[in-house]
Length: 441
Image (cartoon, rainbow, N blue to C red):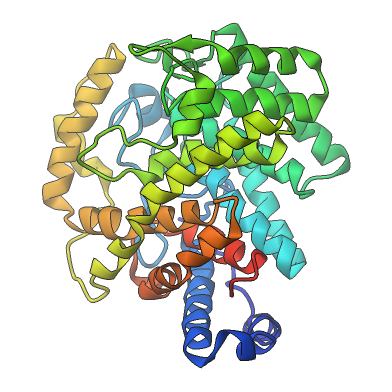
């Protein structure tokens, strides 16, 4: 059962609304004010739903839950056996590190503006969840989630889990969320994992007995690799002051490779690309866009910073195309939702390689699509525009973000968050609080 947390107090909401919106009413005009108020109210509902239903007792953000907050959690035996698959795909604990790390962007932005101890405590809970997920396997392993015992992970992690894990912890230190001994603890864990990955040539290790010893890599000359690796190196140098990481950063930024050789810096400057050109994938692309934004924030060299700015601009232009998809989502839809992943076990087979794990998972996905049509609706028309909205607000030029303001507010205000089964609307919080930080609402 998900860990219940009370939603934010209405009195504080009212105070924030009065402070933020009354001051800007004359400037923005009544229609724009109404749009901003509608978006703020909706985002507050989203925040309440996240903390009511989707943050578990281990301080990890779940993939999905029933409307009452219930969900099935794998047992230690199921995780060790690779059920429903060794990747833990289709479970509610599939993406804990990925989601915690990404959600910290919005949670910290909220806390920095509200100055609320409740918001600080909630953001810090996400940090504790990340530290847990980085401590339940071999060095360098970042877990997706844990079983009912609170410590047994699924056997395989991924690039997509590890990248946001680093980003969330870096953001927590960079923004002052963690201080003193907590700061030292986070930096030590961050550095330990970075060093472990360096020893594996940037490949992500799996737990003993997994179908494969590694899964995923930061070394790829691709959008899934270059920004994440350069961010890791730059951030580790910033956090530790160790010149080893600065030297690696400079070397690997200019190193070339790939089928059509290009440097990692060039890949970053080109911006986000989708793995499958036929589908929009901001939700995975974000795991490189957010680190690219962090690189832009940390970088002092004008040439490198300009390259990162170009990559952010290209990424935002691509992401912005997905923002209006939200308006195609029917809040009154009654499509069937299946949260009980154990109904997929009829297609389970033992897996002895990464390819076999993916094969089992993809076969289950086809069955899940038939049994749970709600999944497609929320993924395409909620997850994609929610992530796209966040990515737009990561643009380094306020004027560019402002051109998308109205579309963003429409998307944020559109959803009935209390009726959604999947948690992947959470990026709307980051979009809202970044808009506020820019003075656009």
